[in-house]
Each structure stands twice: as structure tokens, then as C-alpha cells.
Length: 126
Image (cartoon, rainbow, N blue to C red; front, side, top):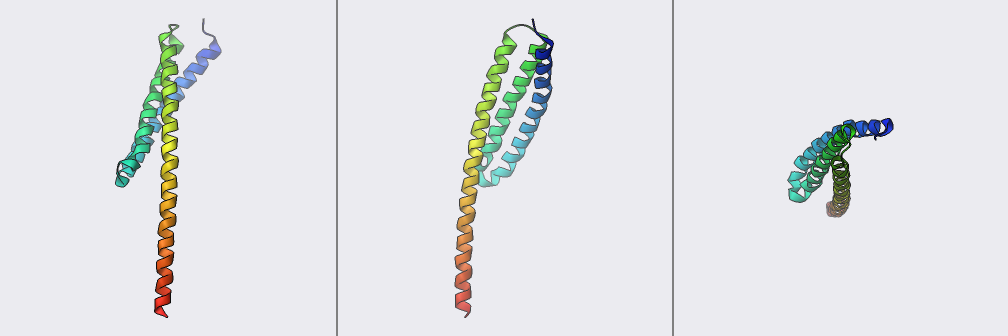
């Protein structure tokens, strides 16, 4: 027998999980679209977000079924999809950290090249 507190929690997971899943998919699509100029590596975080958003949507759907049924199938599906969501979020966050570090290093290199070029320009003008 399901308690009222558990049913409330499942309804909240269902409602907010669907909203968050849709927003994650939309954000992932924008991230992938704007990352395409950097070739496939730039689009990778967006694709990872889209996949994790799909798993969150599946998890929310299972929570919705779970609040209405007592069978074991939605329980297993909820946990499997949530576990997959967590795994894909870790991949996304890892890719984001790596890309951010690459951009920082690239910016520092370009800044140093610009500083050296500016210094040489000043020397040759005198």
C-alpha cells in the first residue's frame, strides 16, 4: 500500500521531472547548435544534455505511472532511467569542464601572442 506522502512525492517528481527534462533537452539543443562551429567536440556537451534530458523524461513518466499503479515495473523503470540520467549528467559535466579548460588555455595562448605582437610593434616604431 502506498502512503499519501509517497504518492505526493511521486507526483512532484513526475511534474517537475517532465519540466526539467524538457528544459534540459531545449538547452542541450541550443548548446549543440552553437557548439557546431567548433566541429563535433563543441556539440558534444549539447548531445550529452539531450540524452540525459530524455532519461529524465522517462524517469518522470515512470514516477507518474508509479503513483497510479502498485506494480513493480514502474519502480524498476524509474530507478533505471534515473540512474542513466545521473550517468549522462556526469558525462556532460566532464565534457563541459574539459572544454572550458581548453578555451581558457586557448585564450591565454592568444593573449600571450597578442601581447608579444604588441610589444614587438612598439619596439619597431621607436
